[in-house]
Length: 217
Image (cartoon, rainbow, N blue to C red; front, side, top):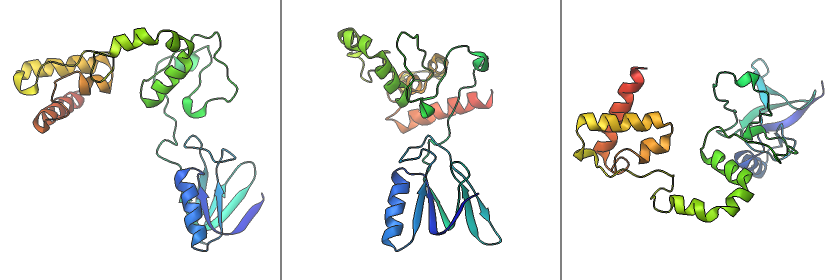
């Protein structure tokens, strides 16, 4: 296995923090090497593994192929999204169609003439849906806008009309339970009581309800 041992520092992750670390350490006079499994400046979608030799006080980092690099210092720039999260859905492993994670999207995969299902609707899901929807969204833009224009949060459901202090304990618990069962954090935040995000007491009450329900699971 080829080995490179003349570096003062090895920086794992060629993204924002890694590139900045490279500049900062070079400005400080250190010899540095940046590695990333992507083969170029990448993102938080790739892994790099390393271990420390405690006897010689050196880091040994396995890179692509049979290459190994060693250094006195190791700086990781993975980012907080470096680990892919797959949903725990029964039967997922037997799904017969093509299945891809946005964190490892194949470069040349075509979605033409395919029925597409998107799991999760966070920031990435929203971007994927709008990109995949493409032509449909452009053609039906007016209808989509009409559907959400009267909602303050534009999330496609009617915002609550009741304030936390106007609801009885039983009503409050029912409201939060119904929105929890509806299935996403946006409903819990914006579909329960009007002052959930602006009144500290209302927010604390929601935390107590949610915490008690979680402990009972």
